Amino acid sequence: MKIAIVCYPTFGGSGVVATELGIALAQRGHEIHFVTYQQPVRLGLINKNIHFHEVFVPEYPLFRYQPYELALSSKIVDTVRQYGIELLHVHYAIPHAYAGYMAKKMLKEDGIYLPMITTLHGTDITLVGNHPFYKTAVTFSINKSDVVTSVSKSLKDQTLEIFDVDNDIQVIPNFIETTKYSQKFTDCQRTMMADEDEKIITHISNFRKVKRIPDVINIFYKIQKEIPSKLIMVGEGPEKEFAEAQCEELGIAEKVLFLGNSNEIDRILCFSDVFLLPSETESFGLAALEAMANKVAVISSNTGGIPEVNIHGVTGFLSDVGNVDEMAANAIHILQQEDRLEEFKQNALNVAKTFELEAVLPLYEKVYEQAYASRFKNSY
Ligand code: GMT
Image (cartoon, rainbow, N blue to C red; front, side, top):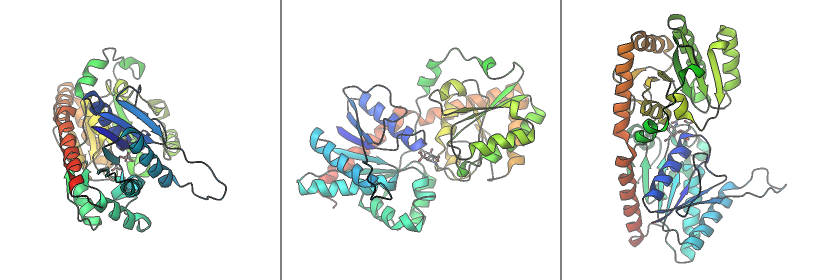
């Protein structure tokens, strides 16, 4: 099939899922067209089955806000006309589903029916989309999508609770390719990051408030008092500067490495022992799944979709949001004994394998067939 994928091209989870999905679909013979404002960070080489179309928004002094949705919907229409796209898959409702609907309407004028699948990822529902400024448009876009999917059961329930949705929502979990990780790095050099006797704790995120970065630092502060260890902080975002200052204040600056954004998270995770994800809310927690696929135990909050990924007492532990004492105690419990640590790590990998790409990809393909078939009933 010829499929256009609209996503954010940045390091966020929704962009990562959209990109990995597009790459996998292209490997299975589909023709994939990414439509977004810059080449997605996880997208390597473009090839005959993978195309990238840049959405460009020209600056004009009259505009206080640049009209991205307008440029995006025009680009979708042009791409559909030029390449004969059969299906549109938008990741993250705002403003992608809205722009997608406008593109559908414009194409209808030409007698072209473009089925649209909208995948909800989390903050488009729980934080941003929920705001009264956006809610009406988000509800409309969800209801006008031909198929709606959400990345966890928890996110589906929240969407139905918050919005007046009359569309069915299908749960298709995020996925991972565990073989990709196990084959890739044999040069796991822990010593580049920590001393021989030290454990390695990792956190990866976009350093937004929702990730509760001060909790990450406080949990590590308590861990390192009991267990010789290092904390690796991967990512960039508004809370990073404060976190660096917090480490200085607590006197642990030499034990915490801030690495910035990285395209080699598997290289970092392959020598990690415990991953920290104490988020306020998290629709799925892709970062935790990526850690688990690299045999890393997870200490997290028990919010949103995280319990669907991190299994309490098996792959790690879950605690109430903000309960840093318990999270630190659980991490110490795992790290204290080598055989216990190894058991949690192995369990993490085993559970990660239940989210294998191979099992999830056919679910998307089924949804595509369903959306494609909807052209006969035409849902404008
Ligand atoms: O976590 C973020 O702030 C980024 C955000 C995104 O949209 O890129 O992530 C959301 O989508 C991911 C992929 O489906 C999920 O794994 C994350 O849990 C979700 N984030 C939140 O719900 C806060």
